[in-house]
Structures are given as C-alpha cells and as structure tokens.
Image (cartoon, rainbow, N blue to C red; front, side, top):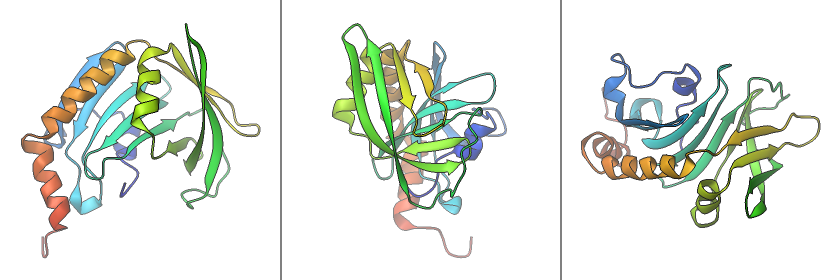
Amino acid sequence: MKKTLLASVAALGVMATSAFANEYFFEKNVGYWTVFGHVGDAENNVNPACLTQARWDDGSYFQLIQDLADGELMIEFTNNDWNIEGPYNDGNLLDLTMNMYGRKGVESYNVKFILVDKNTIQIRGIDYKTFLPDFMNYNKMVLIMPGDIMNSEVKLENSTAAIGLMTQCLDESDKIGAQKSLEKFKRGPEQGA
C-alpha cells in the first residue's frame, strides 16, 4: 500500500458529504458498520480502496481495508485512549495477539503491526482465507497489545452483512470511479498537472 490509506479522512469522520462526494463511489451502513469505497488520490499517493469501518463516539475507529490497487487486506485501528510512544512509521514490526471470541470458543492470531502514531496501528498483509471467516462468524475481536498498552475490543455484530456490503463495494469498484483511478495509478501522476 502506498500510503496510510485514508487515515486523515477517516480521522475527521468525513463520509460521502457533498464536499467529498466525488471521492466516494460507494457508501452503505449496516448496524454500526459503514462500508465505503474511495476512488483514491493519485496526486497524494493514496490508493483506491473499499473500507469497512466501525467508529466510536470519542473518534476511535476500526477499519478493514481492501486496497484496490495492490489487493492488500489490512486493518487500521485508532484508539484515542492509547498514548503509545514512538518511533512512528519506521517500518519496525511489533507483535500483538488478536483473539476472536464466539460460540466455537476462541481463535487466536499472532500478528505484526506498524505503529502509525500514538493512537493508531496498522496490521498489514492479512490472509483472506483464514481471517474473513472468523471475522464474520465470531462475536468480538480483542487486540491483546504488548507491554502496558491497553487492549482493545471490537464487537463483530453484523460483520457478515458488512463483508457482504464490502463485496458489493468491490463489485462497484469495477465501474467508473475506482477503475478510472486505478488506470491513473498504473500510468502514474500526469506530468505538468
């Protein structure tokens, strides 16, 4: 992925409002999940993507992101109660355990994350085949953070429906908005623009 995808847009809580409507090609809600498609921004090196997002009142958010240019599936999680000391975006991979809880018991993943800023982490290169079935079929996900960093929980209610909407977003991306953006990424930034 070229750049922290939509972190500044998501942090502001901006959705498909009239000022930004041309940047989004898809937006639907189910439960507390919002699924949206962003056409990307070649000039600012942001790839087009489909995102499934849960947001809390304090501005914290969880995003499951499908990058449309390179196909990567990743998580970006911002917890405004965290105050993690850097260095940030230095490429250093840190360890955490991601537990999924449900009727079947607990499924655990040991994953690596990148520290983006004092409140935000990214988990890159998620394997679709193992992660998505658990994401859709368990009740909650808990990120067990290293050291004295507070753990975080995401309720997975309606996650199956949210992934269904994300599939619709991916289907829509084959149409006008994201496809034009993808073509622009493949060509590179236009000279003199």
